[in-house]
Length: 294
Image (tube, rainbow, N blue to C red):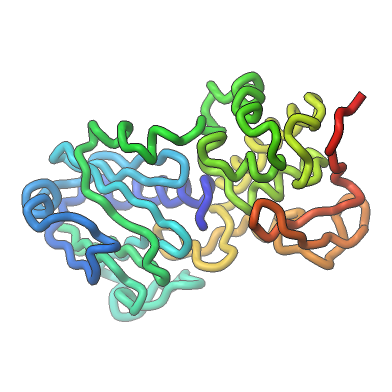
């Protein structure tokens, strides 16, 4: 699933590509991917233009001049890809993963007045684009449950520690994956930040020393920012708004590095299961905290 850096990279790309573009038409293959009434589409989507692209956690909000927004969750395999008129018929010359669009994974096609098109692709059909009044989106139950944004200035260590306390009896990785604790961190960046802080993912939150949690807080900010700089992580399906790969995986220390030497100590990185997810860890570098540290 695309995580904060990937969704943020899509946000910045779309902000550059589609702001002020008018929507001429929309086609979709299933209401599951585009659960909106024809009346709302006619009144609040068609013949409006994009005025802002925002992100909250792993969710995008494409704000429209009608006072409505397209709220987009990419889920596991969703992609938002813009194509200019000049790229039709030959794909995109710089693409690594996306060829000619639309293709069999295209769920929604939005034609813009400049001849460009915004495609919502989703192989597994778990993602969606919902048309909602912009003003009510913060009150949506899903949005109200989201934890703090890790890249905002207000996300200081005190806030982080208080959020973790809510999951003090779970593993530290389970706490990081909980979107009510922290918005936007998923499997890739949980593994990477825990390695940077030298904390074993199975460590119980309440037993992790405060000094280690401070290292983790710093690592979360630094690694997320670095991944955004690299365009996010293309592990499987993720591409940016132009259909290109992100390169953070090339710089990852442990994620997808099982059986390879740890970049710090040289011991083999192993893959285990924590919080129901495949988890990459160096058991030599990352300490397991299960009881009170003196």
